[in-house]
Length: 126
Image (cartoon, rainbow, N blue to C red; front, side):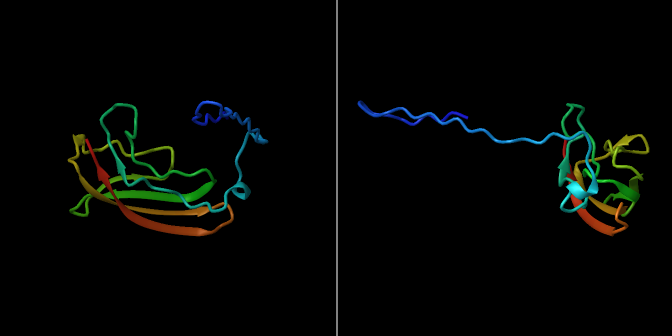
């Protein structure tokens, strides 16, 4: 990284070159994760622009017995999955769902057999 420092006449221009050691590995294990809790975003925009088009839990550890459910404001189950690879695209019964706040419930067990239960809300934006 180089850093440019504004200079006046007769001042010295300073450059710094920083080198950081980097370790590369081809796989991730639970030992690499300080916590294996999944993260659920607070909003998504299923508008087919290729950015945040699906709502799904995010994480890098190994998860078992996963259940991710999404409910609308009338407590109707609009989406359910057992995988972090499958996310909600904003449709329910082949109908595009409105901009609104939705509730999610997430249960899972990590590979160390620790059980997690999380819940929260997110916004569907268009």
